[in-house]
Image (cartoon, rainbow, N blue to C red):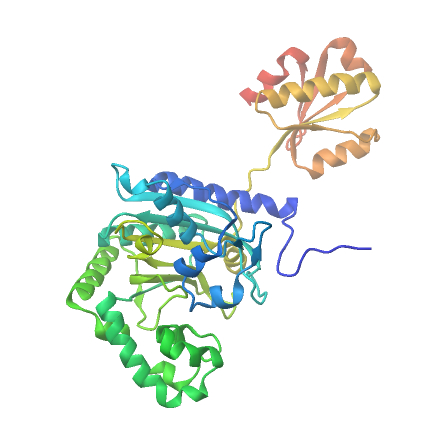
Length: 421
């Protein structure tokens, strides 16, 4: 019987994992620069957390969650996104009582959604995200957007487009909701069954429909920005002013609503404009979620965040032909000739590694020529051949592979020799 990786998942093999590590290093380094501290939450949570936090009218909750009942009869769900869990932890551990607000969090880990597999989209995918909870300042919105843009710039992407919108406050949403119902209701029978249900429950979700996105009524649907209250309009203006000050170009898209119910005020997406990237261009999305902390049982603590898929980031790098700087240098390869030499090689390799020098040796008792080929294939900077003569002299010829030059070095001086080069 043969086994294969489950549909919608992937194995990240050693020749690919180096790229992941490079991207993850950029994410962690920028988190440090922006002062977003890592939080690690469980892979599964109470199903109700996502129903209340993400919204029961979203595709995620209605169609895409991996939900199961445990032996205690509790309904649990593999996390489909990171914000709800981060906010739950914020409330449970009373982080709102910390003296420094907003609380800035970052996370990275697998998420799970049962959706159709496409290029760069999997049912298990790795998501990086940040949350800034405890501030309603438009400046923090600009900071979060700047953080997201910096990630893509840092890895070398250039074909990017930032799209922003304001979803307004409750008064804005109520007025817009009425306008949407009046707009779509006469022709709602022409829309998919999901949109027909959304009309009364949450008509804003119609604008995010993937099935009916080309319907003529979508193009001239009432825009949220036309219903912004004075406060919402002023808030959005300030966010745009901050982005202008930061030199971050953007486009305002009145139809950008994002796929989660908790968003209000600022919403944004970063898209790839690279040729051949694919029909779905979104790389990253985020926005403000004032009220979510209260919905999950906490105090009034407004927040904003974003999340991105590492799989799609790597796909964008491929589309633009950007090669990451891989740090996989093999400093020393030890070629072994005979059993006595192998014992000494094990000792030397261990000493190299203890001093931060990457080292490897032959474990297959191959001939010298085959071992040299391995050293060359792995890009070893130095090679030493260890045999009876070297053991007697307690010294070895160190060959620099790039130049072919050799230098005799005593065993006791090998570490210093490599470190000083």
